Length: 351
Image (cartoon, helix red, strand yellow):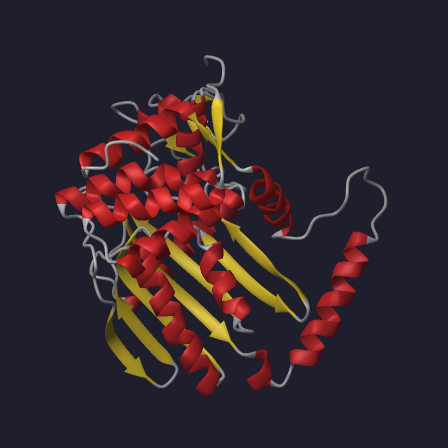
């Protein structure tokens, strides 16, 4: 790989304004543009550049070709007791997922728990964002997500891509403390992280990617060749099993589409099954807080390592604190791609 390209540092507020300007120019309402901007920039702030503003070129291309439907209203397909199944109609995922979670949060407050299905939404971004939304409302949440797009991940034991990166997330609120947020792709790396490495001109870790011939590679461009390479599941058969669960629970159970063949169309479609539980209604809030605190204290007491023991969500909070104060690094290639997307909708430059 060539040496890494230089990065520019952009203040978060400026980056939000740029995203709002671009999405307003392509036709989004002010609410839609701001929700997209808040989500993408928050992903960058937390260090997940794979789900940040680097997604703008794909989103704008999809909006222009109609595979992303702007200003879509979330529709309710099933509303029965603790079950709320929503259809995104290929609408902007940052809006569809937010509104679906709000519907689930409202229902869980009434019934103590809610199973929320969001099917057929355009790309819903960083899944931890939705776990955090539920945690802010005091709810436990579990999220199974599938991806219908260009297959990027080979089955365990295979060499050809057959599924998406199928993320999984859990959010656990803590009284007076940041929530515990587990959020990961079921592939060794998210496809977006490979794209980020390609744009930066750096290699990816060993053991994450196979080239088109099925051979291990650290060159991120091998994922995007014709024919393409393939990511591998994390944890061998264990990650593959969780990926299968995300595919079938996240989509098939709630009436969404599974990745059952090559990509059709240009969009990135997500379906998500979310399970929301109220510890207050369950009567276990005090136990949850006490036992979580005891567990975390016990884990952090392990003193055989030089570095601190981190809980899920800690690295993101540390990165967010630094980037909020110092700015968000954007590599030159990504910045140029965002600029080209902006020009395609009549925004002449990124001011």
